Amino acid sequence: MTRISETDRDRIATLFDRHLEAGLHHGAQLAVYVDGEPAIDIAGGVTGPDGEAETRETRHVLFSSTKPYGAVTLHTLVEEENVDYDDRVIEHWPEFADEGSEKADITVRQVLSHTAGLTQGEIDERPDLWGDWDAVVEKLEEMEPVFPPGERPAYHPLTFGWLVGEIVHRVSGTPIEYAAAERVFEPLGMDDTGIGLREDEDDDVATLVAFEEFDRCRDPGEGLGNHTQVAAPFNDEGVHRAVIPAANGIGTAGDMARFYACLANGGELEGTRILEPETVDRLTRLEVETEADGTLGREGRFALGFWKGGTAVAPYGSLSPKRVFGHAGLGSSVGWADPEENVGFSYVTNGVRDGSYEHVARVNALADAVRHALR
Image (cartoon, rainbow, N blue to C red):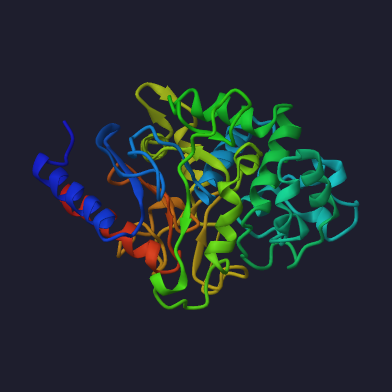
């Protein structure tokens, strides 16, 4: 039996509804697992300004909440000893860099911990190329590090996913969208989640709305810039059908909560194991931390494909414990795991709010309510 009482579930649902009533977004989903069992799974609002009623099966663009899906796919290959964290990327992808160059020393560990130095480049500004995997890979091969590899934590908004994805492709022989499905989504029963849409899937994704400046709090000068501009391409069907393993995961909060419930429980959920406990421990250990991330300009504590809690900007609760790990996506989604409490949490919306405060405030309110209910 779940540790969240019916009374507390009602209170959490009331808070969830309040966010909709206040106009923080048009539609949303909240899902929570406790001790490997579903405790909360609710949806409300509409799929867009003129949309239909939101349901628990409504699929959303997950933005950077996609990153852990690709990362865990790569971790399964490490566990199978097909690749090692300290391998240089060129050992598996020779065209990645010229031997003897600074770039040639970039390791798999640095890619996963956002210390590879390949933060942003021409490809970030070319949505027209995002649907062409070979063109993306070519641009990555042409890129030079913005920072010396291994020297500075600097978030890789889009390149993270393509780098991880091509490493997975080179090591396993399987494109990342299919490898993630085979190794993560299908085993865990994440039936409504994928990296991009496939040809046989309808484009029924919820419409994203990035709120205008007069609707927002003052910008503290952090983040990726104008959220309206950054989010705009992600309502395009061509982008939905591309493979962007750092940003265009398509899925639900229910599926994401299952994913984090599995990791919170040492890599196993409902009798299905995707990683060994030792691997989960390794991938969630703190790798690097900074008071001013080289891309976002704010605190960061990076594990291997995940953000750790313990900072003022971590969206895992007002006083997020350092042990918590997860990821947020461009002011619209967040998922996290608390291994000590054995909780998997996900909140997904179609309203893009500023990630440095507005989004953190709304998700922390729900995270705090869940933590209070567990006491």
